[in-house]
View 1 (cartoon, rainbow, N blue to C red):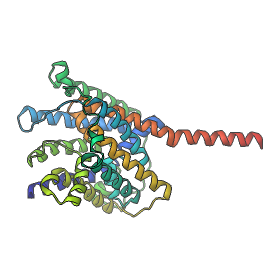
View 2 (view 1 turned 180 degrees about the horizontal axis):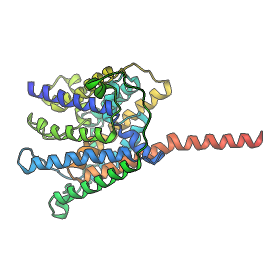
View 3 (view 1 turned 180 degrees about the vertical axis):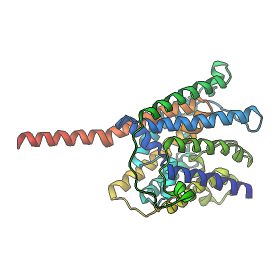
View 4 (view 1 turned 135 degrees about the vertical axis):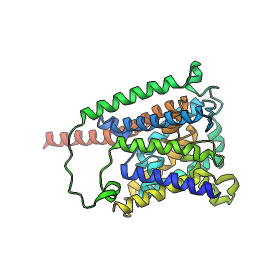
Length: 356
């Protein structure tokens, strides 16, 4: 138990600290791909996936960890990921983003996190368990992409690495604009950790490294998996309600608590922590988004981290199909939340100008 607590909190704190300081937000990244045609955060995600994939399969190759891709519940993955994508736009952050932004003092993220945790628990062990299980029969026996084609995983990792390096180099060559910055007020490590702006690609490499070390740390406690947010979040509430630590307390629970703690430390150190309350409309949107996040992630078998970062790195159909439909969900929600209202406002303004 001591090992579980220490390593889970340590890994989670590192992840929360890095994500908060690097502003590693997949929700904003997916949204900006559509609204601003800015793919930098998506390329950053590819870096994190690639780093983790190379490292984890090396550990598997040397017999240090185990992994079983299982079956591919394709219909649940597609529908759940699309719903999750809609939810993160309404909530203003994905599962991990909601945890770390709650650590910054954002009350809206607390509201979204509450909805996310409650719905995840209801789906996994509550009244909606039959709904959660309803799409499981629609599945393929093989979830591993390399196994589907009868090939080794390494050619697929090589292709991913080449694509990622090409996109990153192309992006770095394109964005050579120097952004003016205020003179630093801190020095040394204090400046680097809490004041200097982190490049998203550097942050992504750190996230990939943390995702890699999560595997042996988690498996050492009997939890045969890497980073995961949805099930541990649900387990936290389930434990508080039932008191059954043997069933619900595992390494993942301390991971998510660590994310909150690490983000809090980063926000305090960078003087970015402050309580910020949303207006009523934003609060309702945050809660609704949190509910959709919990519902969709439970159906899909993972969130933007569990599927979008971890299962993609493990070269599974679930991970890559989930990532595609997650992005489509964010784009759909972005249209109705941002694009359509702006178009209507411009149309109304143009009409008023013509009739004036």
